[in-house]
Amino acid sequence: MKTKSALFFILGLVILSSCRKSPYNIDEVIVISDSGNGTGNITLTADKEYLIDGLVFVNDGQVLTIEPGTVIRFKPGQAENASALIVCRGGKIMAEGTAAKPIIFTAESDDLEGSIPLQTGGLWGGIIILGNAPINAENGESKVEGIPVYDERADFGGTDINDNSGILCYVSIMHGGTSLGEGNEINGLTLGGVGSGTEIHHIEVIANNDDGVEFFGGTVNCRYMISAFCGDDAFDFDDGYTGFGQYWLAIQTNTAGDLLAEHDGGFDKYSGCTKPVIYNSTFIGRGLTGNKGLISFRNGSGGIYRNSVFINQAWGVKIQYDGTDMDSYTKFKNGGLEFENNIFYYLGISDYTNVMNLYSETVNIPAEKQDEINNYFLTSGNVLSDPGIDIEADHIVVLPTGEVSENTAVYDDLWFDNVDYKGAFKNINWTSGWAYLSKTGYLR
Image (cartoon, rainbow, N blue to C red):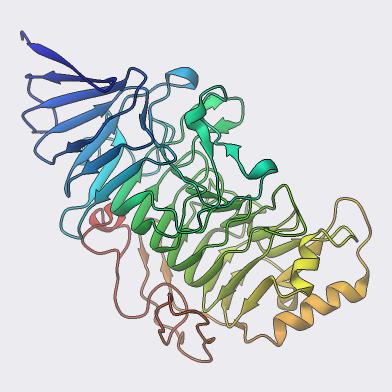
């Protein structure tokens, strides 16, 4: 079949428009690659098929708009040939899908009808958003992993807590996490120094080879987040992230995935450290085999979890202790690390009073310190009970049948919805309609 192609240059963005029939039943395929100057101000529409080739940037001052229902695919490739979309500091992405018309980022070979097994990852890079919000790094700036360090567009961090990188909502990010080198993959969604002026909700990351969502500092708040079948952590917090989260769902397979949430510190372990505040999460582990845990805190990181459900994992919460005032145990002592009014169930530990544990790689832990942690857990409204979440080999029924409404914690900021239950769900499945995992029948 003969084809005709037209080549356009828009502020350095190379757009190749092909008249041949797309295999995905859309009349026009547009291949996008970055010749050095970013996307410019462009709009991607749902009536066309897009294919990203290589690293494509939305540069400072540029706005990339993506209409509801648009599908954007990414070419395969590793290392310098990886394909990813990067929104730089000062750039904006306006990807505002709807429940009826979500926006999808996926692999070139994905026909969205089962051509790729649901748990397959590593077929392309990921989505990276970088902002001007504060981060805990030397000189207040850093370079994001996955982009060549010599490229200034990899920089993130600043002083604007309200920085606005745009909108990302009703979005699915699937089958990413290609290798950049030994042990270095791209996260499904990377948020580096993203500010609270950015709107992020109803996001789904499926089968990313690295972390599902990773926060490097910043203050962005996120609702309705799904991270499923990822090769490393479902959620990862670094470099002083201090945003809020509500209605988060993490799911692991029985063969892949590390922690459901990993908390790390930053350059300054005394101040400006990682401390997300998360209510109404449901974290479902990979089962009692595999020696994996729910959550870890290290390098002076903290975090607060309330009104949440944690189930189906080999061990619980680990908190680093090193005998100094720079460890995560100190954050616990100072009120920066809290677990209150949560449900824990089906954990592979012999004594349920030991859901939270201190660990150290350098010193012996005094018994009274661990006793203090145990007593805190038992007196902070946490319960050990079955929330009634049905976990099957080919699906999960996310609506709980057990008691999840008793003894809920107070919501201490007006940003949070004041709801009367624990976990991400009560009687409404908010994944229905827009999430690919719901459409396949995996989430019910």
